[in-house]
Image (cartoon, rainbow, N blue to C red; front, side, top):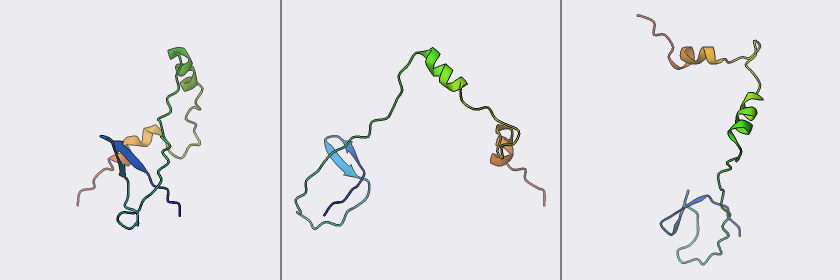
Amino acid sequence: MAITVQAVYEHGILRLAQPISLAEGTQVEVVVMAHEPTIEKGTPATILSAIAALPLQGDDDEFSGADHDCILYPQQTAE
């Protein structure tokens, strides 16, 4: 039987993200595959170049940054 479960390594102990159904005392074999954050390294110029290459907001976009406040803070109507 194989079970895949997420865990966090803290203070020398693997803490499971959710409980698993195993009988107390069951011996298991653990294979650890760390999920390291992917941070792209580069010079400030290459990072800024990648940002500049992102698509601009177009007129046909359903959502726009201009809608930000209207969506987060809808106007309250007086009753």
